[in-house]
Amino acid sequence: MKSGKKLDLSLYLVLDANLCKTPEGMAETARKAVEGGCTVVQLRAPEWKKKKQLRAAFLLKELLKDTDVLFIVDDHIDIALLSGADGVHVGQEDIDPKYVRQFLGPDAVIGLSVGSIKELNTIGPDVDYIGIGPVFSTKTKVDAGAAVGLGLLEYISKEAGLPNVAIGGINQSNAADCIRHGADGVAVVSAICGAEDPKAAAAAIKKAVNDALSI
Ligand code: TZP
Image (cartoon, rainbow, N blue to C red; front, side, top):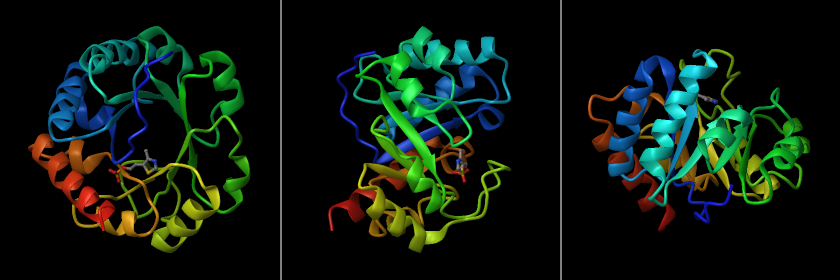
């Protein structure tokens, strides 16, 4: 894995199996969101069998291969390797980032979810960025846990001292708040995947993030 792409977390799209329905639907949503300015695309489809996830991964790799947009696979190292993704995102219950690094090598981008002060201890040297959340309540991930809020987002982002992205319940109207409370970017599922016009939704969130980042 060696993409040489820059780690720009400003608008991180997490694709959702239920909202996108098919691998082709996922690739279409990703295409529109990239047109709207999204900088990272994550394949997250725990509801799908491996074969279907891999089909989506190949489509997404094809879409993103000649762009600056990072392609990240949630949890599955095998899918990331086979599709030539730029990296893997793991949760607290997934494989430890140090083993992900062993598999994927020095150039892979590795992300870790952090949802509490206690979980700050799980950030090791192999983690390139963290996802902090859920910042606001969300219906998209049933086991996401309680919302941490903007105060904890700010605390965790400062303490971690790593590039970070806020996730959970984020949309056009609260994205700037996340940036003002220490996030380098926002990760979004339903506000883009569930939008009638994913390109316009992505563009509106990106503008809110960029405006807040430039203050
Ligand atoms: N991890 C923490 S919250 C979440 C994930 C994957 C879902 C966020 O979805 P939405 O629709 O942007 O609230």
